[in-house]
Image 1 (tube, one colour):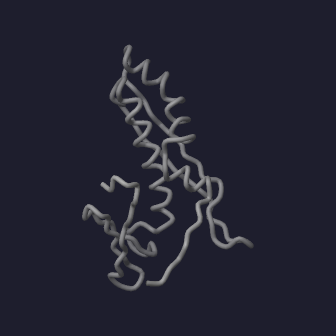
Image 2: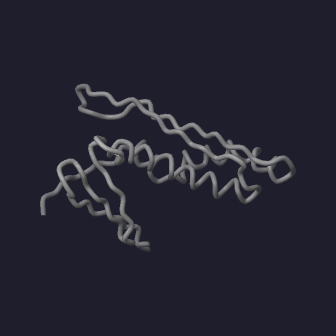
Length: 140
């Protein structure tokens, strides 16, 4: 991974409405219009928000106990208005359970603070969306 903070992916067109996204380490994911099983760009944005905060919360809580259940749902409303197409009301819902015992109790106690910490400062994706970072299109 880049040590200087730079992050990049490349997107190649495979066919009409179908693309392959490749990261700098060679990983790929199929993206498209949603006509088949591929993820749409909006779904990828929701997945990125959920995955980012899931990783933060999992790292913080699983130090106390391995979760017995860990699911995160991310939902939003897609609207088109005077601002154009965008998402509103993005909600991230955690469903996390831990085993009985001292470790599980410690993880349960830590969970609300871990979720808050991820939201407030750790999750780069969610924080970027909330801050409204400019996106600059270029033609090379």
